[in-house]
Length: 70
Image 1 (cartoon, helix red, strand yellow):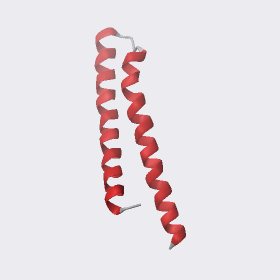
Image 2 (tube, helix red, strand yellow):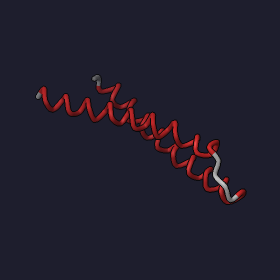
Image 3 (cartoon, helix red, strand yellow):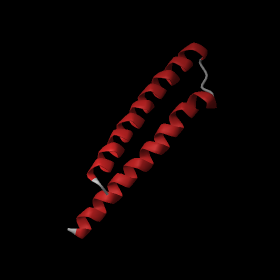
Image 4 (tube, one colour):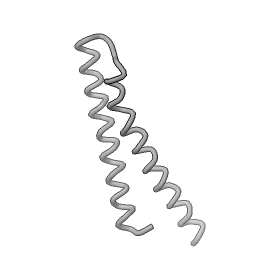
């Protein structure tokens, strides 16, 4: 994988986990206001968790294959 591609994917992981933090903040605010948590609130966390995990997995697999080649 190209170095620039790895950098872009790394930035995407950081943005994804930043979205998780924002989602947790929104979830805490929603719970504080209504004392209930709905699927709509949790939905804000699902997409960044999945996408960040997949991108991170891609980076780890690339690093492992890079070590095997060397």
